[in-house]
Amino acid sequence: MKKTTILAVIAMMLMTMTACRHHYEVVGVERSRILIDSHWDATSDAEVAAFLAPYKHDVDSVLGPIVGHVARNMTPYRPESALSNLLPDILMWAAKNYNEEPVFAVYNVGGIRADLTRGTVTYGDVLDIAPFENKIAFTTLKGAEVLELFQQIAKRGGEGVSSAVRMVITKNGELVSVTLNGEEIDPQKDYRIATIDYLLGGNDQMSAFTKGHDVNSPQEASNNTRFIIMDYFRTMEKAGIVVDSKIEGRVVIKE
Image 1 (cartoon, rainbow, N blue to C red):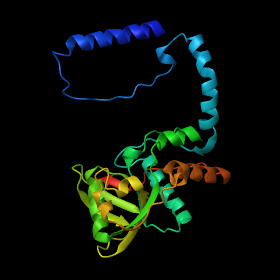
Image 2: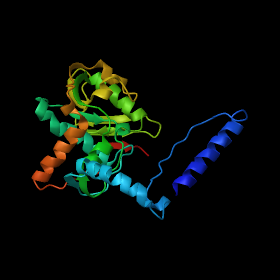
Image 3: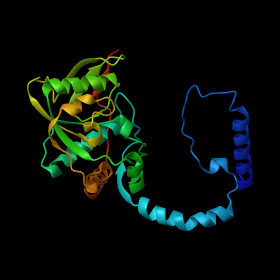
Image 4: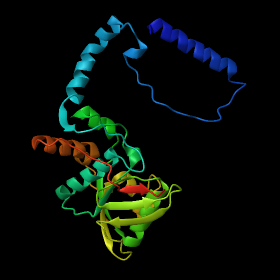
């Protein structure tokens, strides 16, 4: 689409909005994702391409380096997905670097902002997945509070949980059962949990996290989840391992 055409469309939209503003009101908001690529412009603008070229080179030099490989396409969704399984497992993997031994990990699906495509994984891919300033964190909950947490996760239709978790929920968001490493949760026992600092504040309707104690929440930039994810991929790449993750019944909806 030519620049003049784009300006004309914008002008028409503004005039239409001005003319109609006294007759209509917003009653709802919906969103969708539109991929902006060559599909929208059969003939590229050479002048614009030349202008962007040096910036594209700089961006590609930062975001383009490969940090690892994945064995399959991964998309985050509830109640369980390969990608929402992988990220809490990565938190568990990183725990040793903080002298922590959590029983399980929780990573909110809403915090996973992009997919992974089978093959190479770049710095930019990881940045797309974890664009926020969320950092790894650890807390301890009593078993009764852990059960409360899983009830809240059930109400949300599932979240990213690590491999120790096996939970069954209903379509209506009720918790049917849950075990950790195959064992029932003891209401009086302490359970160490790996997560992100965003959830420690009770966000995404997981208020049980606010009851935690012995919190370890390092705030240096190096503890950002994106860097932890990159470190994991680089470590696997150095070992010659193609990263994989599968749906394995961590969160199951009872039919």
